[in-house]
Amino acid sequence: MNPALLLLADSRLPAGGHAHSGGTEQAITSGAVSDVPSLARFLRGRLHTTGALAATLTAAAHAQATTTASPPVTASPVTSPSTSPAPNGPTPRSPWVLLDAEVDARTAAPAQREASRTQGRLLLRVARRVWPSPVLEELARAVPSPHHPIALGSVAHAAGATAEEAAMAAAYHAISGPATAAVRLLGLDPVAVHGLLADLTPDLTAIATEAHLTVTNALSTADLTVTDARSTAANPASTAHPGLTIQPPDPADPRPWLAALPAYSSPALDLLAEQHARAEVRLFVS
Image (cartoon, one colour):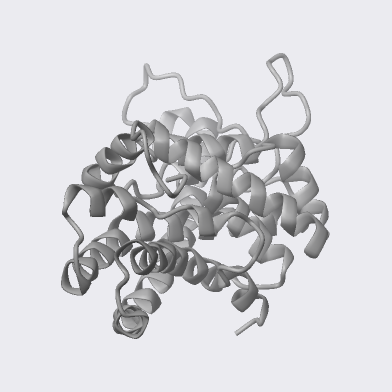
């Protein structure tokens, strides 16, 4: 394990994570969380929805950072950065912009989107000083306030962590902050709450592994899809629809693999986030 993972998962990293409860404050206000057993259910549900999605998107950002740091000699339709104008067409958007848009589409609640971007911006600002990297500079230019999973994945890459380790940090972040917030708001026994986190460690491992495999499979599937599309475009007679005009894939468009990423959701957390954003009195930002 890369020691940088410990720094990224540490709530004392000055990236603003301590100011967010991940819906815990509103869950307590609504009565959904009131003691250790109800907190256990809340954390497990959060981990397997929002946490699993964040882990996968973080692994995807790590994959993009890897490509940005070491672009292939031959342009790939899956991973090549889109920085030059396309012939006879508009300038393609940066892959970071496209990936950020995918995260935006998978974050239904406006309050959740705002919280994610706030934490992403702060993490990126801190990381550019702690782990200077051309990848982080490129991300900052393309998306000054990226979603947190994008910032975390790119920062993990800059720090030397693997994609699976980055996914682990994202999954842990999804439950550690809410657990700490519950201790502060309800006065729960810290040892009992940390026992809940310990019970979830097998789930953390499984989610991180699954996130890495999902991204790897998405990239592989997109590679095969693009290869098939190129083959069909080059040999129109081979298609089952002779009248169909097939456009060759854009070598600067990474969307084929982004579309294959999952879109887990948690409507209850979205509702809690929106209620919290409208609360007159609150201790945490989210």
